[in-house]
Length: 240
Image 1 (cartoon, helix red, strand yellow):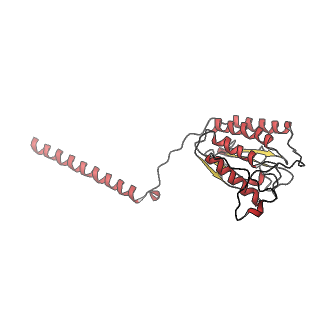
Image 2 (spheres, one colour; image 1 turned 135 degrees about the vertical axis):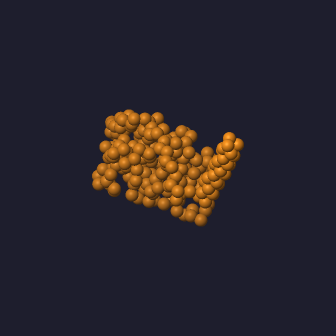
Image 3 (tube, helix red, strand yellow; image 1 turned 120 degrees about the horizontal axis):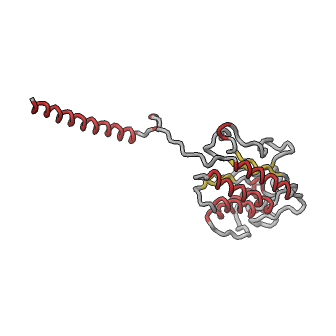
């Protein structure tokens, strides 16, 4: 939706390659026409851990804030990046996922936080419960309280997940550093933050109150104009 505009910058950290759906999101996918360099893609491989993810996420977001200077953020917290997801292939914990939310909130911008993908439902619930607490700056106990869905959280009934120790992280340090440098270089191509575009509101979008105000203003102008014309007419009679 925003691929050809500079009014919105999109930033995506995602699995890419090996024919993984939807097959888009290469680091070279930058946007087009006026939107060139305003689509930021960070392609990652299987098994990325909290530490490795953070090493890319934080410097990229910092550069985005510096270059684009957004006035608001929409943050989509897809939970399919969590360890144990049925379709995802990353190895992030709930706590590591939440650290990204904390990082974005640290910029103190108006922020709308949304859910996203996630195919192991109990872990989606864990993630969004924890990140709601992050937003509210509340601490949650790791032990889950008894509830109607308690049996879904066997065998440990805990809020936080442990990473899968048998999952290999295919994101080598050199690979992540290379991707990070490419993304940062793409962001350096921006010619400053876009200016604010101003446009007159179409008449069809005006509210009835606004229309009434406009009509009242026109009537007041007519009254002043008629009074001025009458005064000038009287002056003309006086001179005769």
